[in-house]
Amino acid sequence: MNFLFAWRYFKSKKTTNAINIIAWVSVIAIAVVTAAIIIVLSVFNGFEGLVKGLYTDFYADIKVSSANTKTINITKEKLESLKTINGIVNYSCIAEEKAVLLNNGYQSIVVLKGVDKNYTIVNNIQSYIKRGSFSTGNVEEPQLIVGAGIENAAAIETERSTQKLLIYLPQRKRTTSINSLESLNSSTIQPVGTFLVQQEFDNKYGFTNLAFVKYMLDMGADEYSSIEIKLAGNAKPDDIKKQLQQLLSKDFKVETRYEQNASLFKIMQVEKWFIYALLSLIMLIAAFNIVGALTMLVLEKQKDIHILKAMGAGNQLIQKIFLTEGVLLAVIGGIIGVTLATIICIIQQQFHLVKLQGGTFIVDYYPVTMQPLDFLLTAVTIVLIAFAAAYFPSKKAANQELNLKS
Image (cartoon, rainbow, N blue to C red; front, side, top):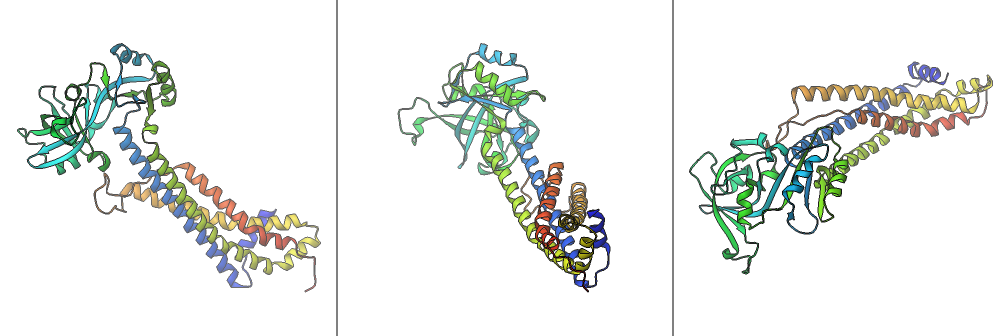
């Protein structure tokens, strides 16, 4: 019954035109803010999915490293036992260290990763090769794949097959100062490929073969920097992590992809919720229009309130009628906003009309991903704010004393 009264009050013509204007202003305000919340959250989802996709391709599902030192010692038998764990597809052994690249007066610091033949199975870096190919060579003739940022910094020409770079890696058993060239092992290496993922990786990493890096660092036969592991699509990383931790000793650190980039993912979530809270605050401010509209409606419908009370309606029913009126205004605005946001998001997904400035990112438009949870969260927010805004005007209407005098 309270909905019928609320709907009739919404449709009916008011004696004071300002009431209609304020009511529609409140509907439009809620619609605009609702659309803004869904669009902004969808853009955040798009960027989050894009970044996670890049990190998924670059970082392994699970990484095993040392809990205390820079390297781990693990036998071939222990490595093969990793495959006995259900859900593990394959693994790759890594030797990693900072190195200096020199090229005719140009130089660049690079995190050099020596990888084995399984690396392209556990990592999708091969699909991001921009020039050349992903070929690491061998210990006698090492080949190098670098990020686009390092390529520019060191003036590397990967398409020039005769180019050779000088590479320096630290001696692990050095006795001289780290600033001396005598404390570094040097060799020549041929650049054969360039990858382009994102700036964080492109300015930092280079890849070559595992045997070469181990030789340059004087690493033992069973010594590695880390083990990167590929999981099956239906495997649960946290369950595999527990099994690996049981198989290996406490000296090994086992991290899922999320744990390898925990700070990044936390920051992304915090940013998204901060924006949601800010837009919700704006919606709360917009809801003051509902307070004004209901307050004026209560004054408009005083005679109706008195008649309803004379007919036996209690204060609770009167309050419900005006509470429903406030929620109705917000819901209508919410439906308009959701519809508008959905149309805008679909257009952006299909036609990429809104472009990113600068052209340095992996895509040149704002990515958009709509998620049902965002729609549900926005709907709940609208209803809660509408109830809060309509409470005091409805309470005031319910507490009016019965008076049938004109």
